[in-house]
Image (cartoon, rainbow, N blue to C red; front, side):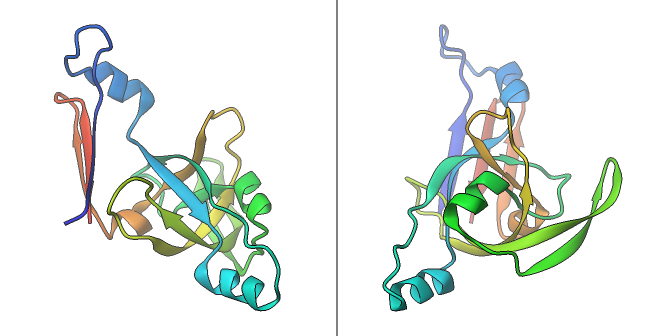
Length: 154
C-alpha cells in the first residue's frame, strides 16, 4: 500500500508540534503535469511536452473537487474542457474544468489523471493545488492533531 506520511516537529525539541500542523495545514508535495493524452498528441505533432510543475497541495475536505492554480494550468498549456457550477462562500459560480495529471514526487503513490478546477493561489507561497474530496475518495486520510502528523494511503 503506497503511503505518504509527514510529521510536524518542533525545530528545537524535535517533539510533535500540533500548533505547527494547525498553522501550516495538511500539505502534501505534488507535481501537476499535462495529461497523458495531451502529451501523446504533442509528441505526435513533434511539439515539446511541458515538464511538470511542483509545489504543495493543501488537503481541503471542504472542497468537493481538486483545484489547481491557473498559473500552473497556463504554464502547461492546458485548455478547458467544460464548466462546473461550484459552491463557494460567495455563492454558486461557474468555473472552468481542465484535464491534468497529478503526481506525488518521491513516493510510490500512483499518478492520477484528474479533472480539476482552475483557481487563484496568489500569495500562497509554494501551494499550487487544493486536494478535494474527489481525489480524497481514492485514499485513506489520517489527520493526527495531537501527534502532529498526516498520513495519506492509497
